[in-house]
Amino acid sequence: MLRYTIRRLIGALPTLLLASMLVFLMSHLAPGDPASQILGSYATPAELEQARQEMGLNDPLPVQYVRWLAKAATGDLGTSINWNMPVSDMILERLPRTAGLAVLALAFSILMGVPLGILAGVKQNRPADRAAMVASLLGLSVPDFVVGLLLVIVFTVNLGLLPSVGYVDFGTDPAQWAMHLIMPAFALGYLMTAVTARMTRASMIENLGQEFVLSARAKGLTETRVVGLHVLKAALIPVVTVVGINLGSVFRGAVVIESIFAIPGIGGLMIGAIDARDYPVIQGCLLASVTIYIGINLVVDLTYALLDPRIRYK
Image (cartoon, rainbow, N blue to C red; front, side, top):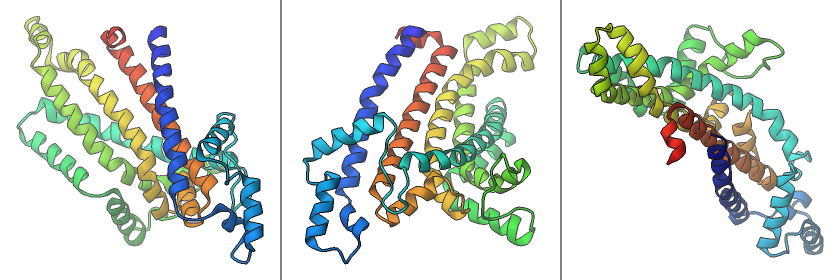
């Protein structure tokens, strides 16, 4: 397992390097001039040229990229143009808020999607299966921001039960933290629930037809033990992959959901930086998101190898 872990870690490095190149190039291809952003519209051409020289913007792009990457590797993502703060500190301050939202959304998707998929798989082609598949189809069809707006209309405007905007730190008031995140987490996890349920159902149906299940039934085991002990363990292996992919996609969806519910996370920071043409913050947010996504996929691969030892030797 140690050799497999080291092999996967080394394999992730080229991906991370390529992603960092794309992040750097995309931010430099975007319209706008960082020197103008700092000095304002009244700066003279000489002042702009001096600022570009001091910021290293006149150097060739490969030189700028290597310099930026070397600093990023030490945790220095530069200084925000608009807020004049270290980008690393800004990201670290907001990352726990987005991470909390992502974990809650993922918990929703697992707690609802896996039982729904098991029920649909065991009751294949019966009314319970059809109802579960209709519910998952709705989840795949309705965008997360529509679900979020519907939740606000029902639970805030009509029932007055939950706050529609804002955020409270977990350490300040755990109950208020949950009250503020429950609707955004559900809106974000709704699509993931549908994907998880469909994958669990397909995996359950596939494994229910395997020979080891027939053998277990022939030994006289109850259907509950056959499904709970034998089928479920094998069926959950591909579900782990889907859960990992879902968690990575949460950070993309969080950009929209955080804007709707006014949560000051990474998504809100990135949108504010794009509006203000704050390139160091845009680069930092993108690099952090890509690194997290690659890290999650690495953890999924290792978990997959733990559940199915054959993976380590392929």
